[in-house]
Each structure stands twice: as structure tokens, then as C-alpha cells.
Length: 268
Image 1 (cartoon, rainbow, N blue to C red):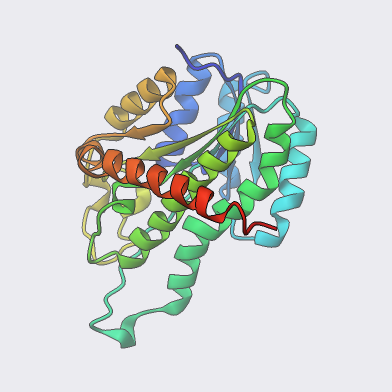
Image 2: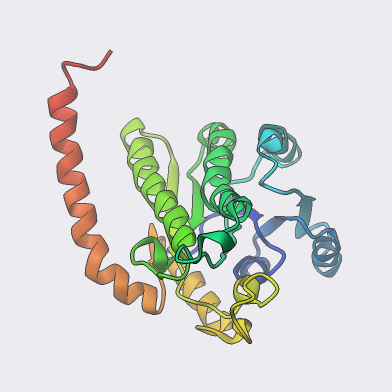
């Protein structure tokens, strides 16, 4: 099938999964607009590849009130964006057996970054994608922990599980509306990125060495994108996905078919 999209808005592109994918996209002739908080990394990215292949925007998705303006500006500059990848995310440890050590500001930030901001971005970006005359895509990075829990990271898993539910519902809404937006979900396993650095997770030592090497993950991600898969689960995430999600999504469809029929006489 091949990757059919020509211009990608990659939100969360200054490190890890996003940075690796940005390089692969450009190597395969795709124009990339990188988005993140670290200006110097974005400038290096554009300088490396040149303005004919790359652009960037410095933006913090947690500034929720600025998301509509961000979307308007970037689509005005690049009206032919046909693929948006919402990849930003953070992970923190929270131990509720020691509630005095639970920082609720950290809790709120994790929930906002991993769930609320992606929903705000979806609302702002979808009108531009649906207005295109050709197929477009909106992709999200969740995690294997959207399906199964890691007890030491309860809010991370919960926030990603919320995003997973949102993605499943959004995908079906778009399909029922006949809109040409493919809704994708990427489920990484633990991957060797900054996500696990002790700077962000001080209970870990050498956290950047945890999990699948980034280049191996990126190779599998690119294969999934080229194949046109809606769900791309990789490594241990695929093992978990294969045991749970096919049955879950089949039951989800059955339930919604029943509810659509049951509610049709009650909808305003």
C-alpha cells in the first residue's frame, strides 16, 4: 500500500518516538512540520533538512486556550497537511499508599498532556482535515498501558486508557459520517526514550535504557504506517493487544449496534 500522505504535522517531535519518525518520514519524501516546546531542537531539525522538506512550530499543547489559534495558523501556512500525528505525552510515578507524597499538580499535568490536550487538538484540527478533497489521517500515540495496568503509574495508564476510548469512538463517528479521515492509534511498548529519564521519573535509574531500542520500534511503526493499519501495536504491546483488543472491539461494535437501535426513537 505504501504511506499515501505527503505532509505531516507531527506534534511531539523533539525527542524519542516523534523525532525518530520525523527522520523516517523525510527520508521517504514526506514534508514534516515538527511541533514541540524545545525551540533549539526544532531549529536544528529544519536547518538539517532545509525549508523544502521541513518546517516547525514551537508550541506547548498544555496551553489549551491557544490550541485553536495554533491550528488556524499552521493550516493557513500549510493548507495541504493531510496527516496529523498527536504524539506528545508524559509519564510520572504516583504512589497512593503515601498520599502525602502525591503531587496533584503533577496528576493534573499528566492528565492534561495525555488526554485533555489531544481531545482539544482533535476538535481544532478535524475541520481542516475533513475539508480536504482527499483522504487524510489523524493518529495518536497511546501505549500498551492503555490496555493493561502498570501499578506504579496509575494516572499514566488511566489517561492513556481515556485517550484509547476516545480514539475508538472518534474512529466510528468519522466512519459513520462518511468523512475521509482515517483515525489511527499507535500502541508502543516500553521504548528507550526520554520518557523514562530520572529527570522525569526520579524513582528510576538509567530509565532511558528500559524497553525496546528506539530504532527497532521506529522500523516497526513505519511498517505499520506503510501497511495502512488503523491500530499499530508493537513488541509486547502487540502481545497484549492480540489477547484483548480484537474481542473488546468486537463487543464494542455489538454494543453500539444495539444502542443505536435502542436509542433511535429517543434522539432529538
